[in-house]
Length: 175
Image (cartoon, rainbow, N blue to C red; front, side, top):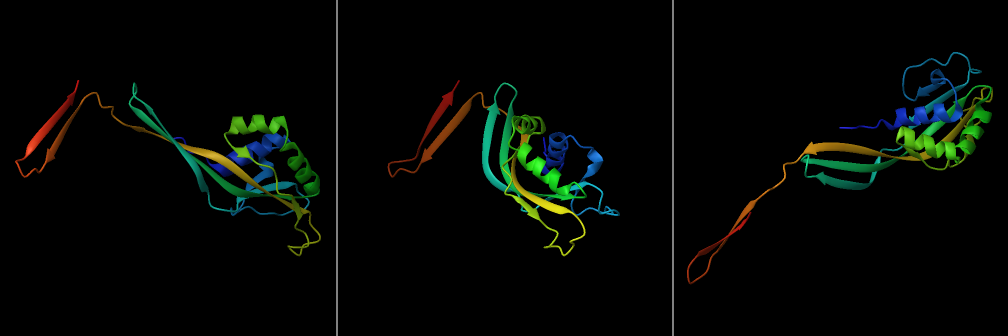
C-alpha cells in the first residue's frame, strides 16, 4: 500500500518551494515550544477531513493485481510566524502559481491549488506584537492500494429454472 501523508507532502513541497530549512517547518497540534516570536516558522495543519472526489480501479491480469486509487481533497492552513512572516507568506502564494510549483507537485505527489488569500492574524489572535499570517489552500492527493486478485481462466455456469413441465439444467462451459 502506498499511503501519502498529505501534511508531510505539503511540508516538503513548502520547504522546496521556499528553499528553506526543514527545521523551519512544523506540524500543527504537536508539542513544540514557540520561545521567540521573532523566529521564522511555518506551521502546517489540516483544516478539513479528506473528501473523496473520485476513484479508479485497474486490473493487471498477467500479475493478478488490482490497483485501487482514491483521489481525495482537503484544506490546509499554513501559518507563517516571525519577522519575515508576511514576506514568506507572499512569496509562497506567488511561487505556488509557478512552473516550479507544478514540478514540485509531481515530485511530492500532491496538487496544491491556488491560495485563498493571506490573512493577517495579529489582530484576530489579539497579539499585535508578533507577526503571524495565514494562507488557506486546498490540496489534492491520491491514496493507492494494490491487492491480489486471481484471474478467471475458465468458468462454469449452471442455470437452474423451475418449470411446470419439469426442471432442467443448462451447463455452459468456456474453455
